[in-house]
Image 1 (cartoon, rainbow, N blue to C red):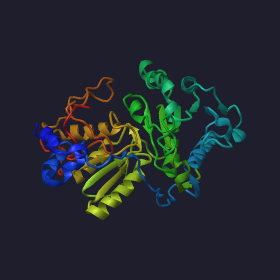
Image 2: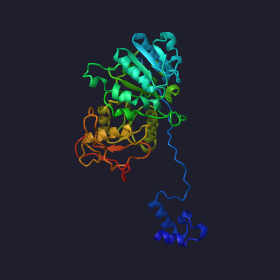
Image 3: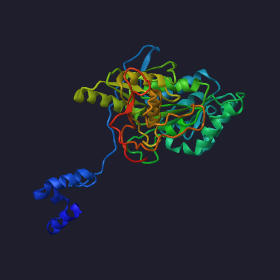
Length: 409
């Protein structure tokens, strides 16, 4: 009623929100604007959800022998070349891979190894993965390419109901562990809805497969070769914005970077930052800004493997810093960052935590949900968690006040 009387007492056309910010009613007007943040005296501008980053190559390593300057797609080509040369059962197939693929990751391989080992498939993602499962079961090293991660969904049933469960349902008599699925992943700035998605969380719910996302050329080659050699079906997502933007000195010979092992890229004491793929480079800049402008020391972790992920490295870091911030490109709701923050909360074993601690083991297909009393932030990080600095022990952790609380998701 007070607001109604105020509007009536303002004169004619000038009775608008603009009038609330000046004159005799200025204090009440500002109070109303504070009470109702959706009301503003200034015209709204659309919020742009974008992030800037600059790729900074890792220091040159001679651990794996002589190196050569490569961008990310060339490092992928190098890994595939090494595999085809060393494994006579290896085959590469997918849409347009025979001429090199839309991102040129298989360029020259058909000419070098023949049309029976590098060949095109029909435009049918379900068929591509289904063929890969059969080839792997028969003993071949099958490397399938899905042209864009956005188009992997027609193959979802083949991946989660066939490839992931083949070993389990046959009592370990058969498996398709020699299957690797590659796919360009993530946003690129102009890809729109069908060329910008990050679907890793869809598959992270399914036991029986491994999911890997590299941050640069050196990691791309080493992790891809580890996926190919691993005895479980793997999905290897390649950040397509880095295909040409990321350039490093990459070893020319075959080498392996262990799966399920996160890498601490920067030591810190105040805040743990966790990311994967392109977002690692965004978090590098965030860490630098936090140090420069706020004096906050950030510890940056590249998760690298989404499933199964390295809980020990992340939790150890959070014990040290006392705070966790997770960032990814995928949508917030149901994103994998929620799994990370939930796991850290569960391990902290706080009886006051509003995140459900009655979770079943990872190998069980059914999992109880996160408490609906928490609404995750609409943009940016999924959650900032503040457990005990000394140990992940009972009654010591809490959700930081930086996360919004009010309504259900």
